[in-house]
Image 1 (spheres, one colour):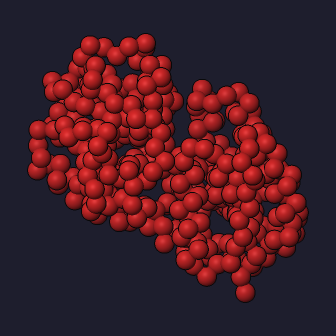
Image 2 (cartoon, one colour):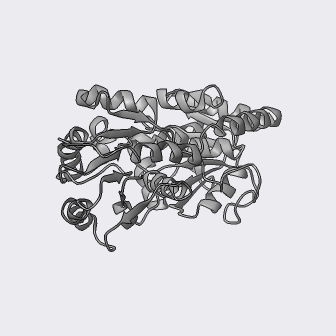
Length: 350
């Protein structure tokens, strides 16, 4: 007999569909195809602080009627009835390692909340081995509670389907998917474009024109004018997939990631990847991406030039990427999560 499972869907109040939100939605969709019986709870659309109050008070009360509360998006009620099992996905510790990316109130809340949630949780899901190690290093009391379950790849991403986007045009282009936060490291890519021997174009997904100006100053240099297209945030997964399929490649220069879903999605789309040489990119990509130093625009420029001029090499990397991406499957992830959520009721959860 399966436990009664309640899933915390507070993340649905977020207007931007980011990696955490997509992870939660894709996982819930995949869980719907298992034999797991579960219910979902979400607040009405509201401000972030109101959704946090809902999570800590209303969700806590509602969870008391269930055997298991699953929170797939980093946060959960600190106080739960003793009989309720808590299973939490903790995506990253960016707030701990790179607090400059967030407001002071956000950092304070997460530094207060996360260690208490880890202590309360029966199981903490991590999206990579790299992140699991970080969690244990920062919070030793997580030892023995961590389960690493890789995210999957949405069915929208694949080598078949529309290529490119009308707004971009037909000239060759590269893609960056991220935001203007310092850890996304867009600056190294823009610097690479300036020194490259070729007139590369780059499409920015997740960064708009105003945000771009905060990275490179009030105006782009003359050399970059007309070659950087900031499209802002795009929630339409099918459109993102089409843009990747039509690209020369994905540029993934971030200095910190917990998994980096766009890199796996690009590989699934047969889109070559140039990635920062970090532990998590090595873990999820193995030897498929082309790696470059996070601080060396010259190296990024050389790799972009090389891929641009060698179509056979791009095709080879595309084929390797499709094979590597096949190892990341939402069906498999959901089956593992379902087994955890189906475990017998824990007695006297501390």
